[in-house]
Length: 180
Ligand code: HEM
Image (cartoon, rainbow, N blue to C red; front, top):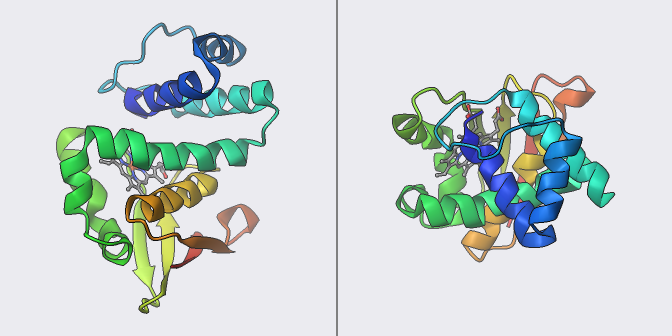
């Protein structure tokens, strides 16, 4: 993944637990990188190892870290760094989610080697929809939960996200019901 992902983890850790915790996490993860470069590619494995080490150090389940990271990604990384792009995605939660299938197409213009996930929506009503998440990566469903929660906060529309199908449990892909 692009270095900006690991940079965002660094920012979240440093803000919540301080720089010493970040250095410790890199050491526990066996990652000898001083500074991540945002538009350079790194093995996905680095990101997974950083999340696992953060989980171990803070005695917090990895899924909780992924959810917190999803919120951080939307509210800090995306809104502060790519505000225009985020606002172009929609003017309310429903609109943003309905447009989500196209979102990374624009991100690819900035990061041409992006390997983005793909999203679909179905069963759209005034209060809810089903969000379908496809990826070649494992273990990131809780990141999506945090992302959607972050979008709910961005639009001041608290959202409930429940997983209706799980690839980890044999389903074809992850499906989330989002209600607001
Ligand atoms: C301007 C805002 C955004 C930027 C710049 C961005 C960029 C990225 C980058 C760089 C990656 C790592 C993949 C790679 O490097 O190949 C990624 C992954 C991902 N993005 Fe985005 N993204 C943005 C917004 C969003 C939003 C709003 C969502 C969904 C609500 C989202 C969902 C995901 C997911 C789930 C992944 C994990 C990779 C996977 O599932 O395979 N992103 N994105």
